[in-house]
Image 1 (cartoon, helix red, strand yellow):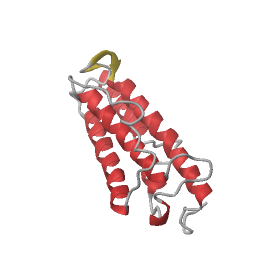
Image 2 (cartoon, one colour):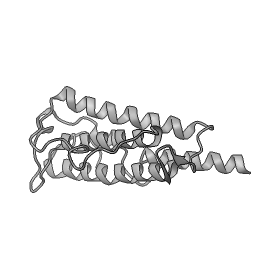
Image 3 (cartoon, one colour):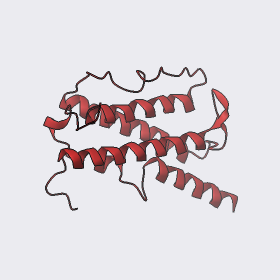
Length: 165
């Protein structure tokens, strides 16, 4: 029974990390994003779609470092987890932000799926936090901003016409 419970917990943590279930997956939100909108600011918003994708990447990279590095040093807020307000990205940089986010998420997923990982054990640099807690935060943070990204696409008119409503 304990092995079955462990398997269920790991499966649920992966689903949460990948925002499967009640939320739009990251891959769907960023798919077919038009080049001409990468650096466009939506009405009444202080950042661009690329800023938001890069924010997701930076936060998740920091979290991956936190859960794997005993000598972890936090990044400064907000400059460590948001691009500079005037920063712009090319198509290649946008795609690199997406790829970096997915690569780090895959690393977190592999860690969760590894039976030698104690998901309820403390992270190496803090006895106050568990890996399960950090995965919960990563999933929650991603779901929030992916929803925001989807709404920005709606407001900006950047969904492909082929997308089923």
